[in-house]
View 1 (cartoon, rainbow, N blue to C red):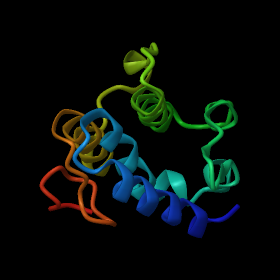
View 2: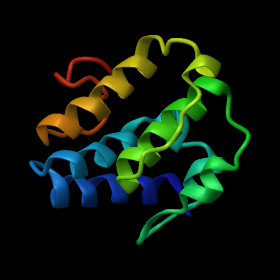
View 3: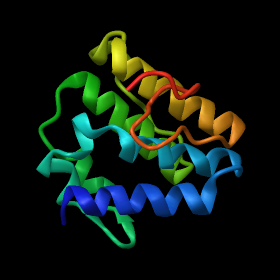
View 4: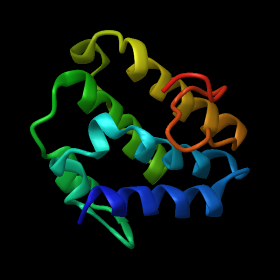
Length: 123
């Protein structure tokens, strides 16, 4: 699979779940190309979605793993333990991604493509 598959998945999720609260949150994550453009992520994406077990098994830095674990938890609807103590405090775009996922979860609003902030402001 490729980065184009990730973009197509984001578009499909946005159309399907925008406005539906917790299901909108997973549509935010594929727009964060720092992670999703990596082969460790997009090689585990297909038309059916993301193979989260394979993605989570990848060699990720602690903060990126925290974001992936958060996305997986929101995607699956399962409570998972994340290593916030490992990740420290996400900064910059990572924090905006995390905030946007949580905001989408609460409101059902998905930021425009290429944006990670809940208000659509930051890339």
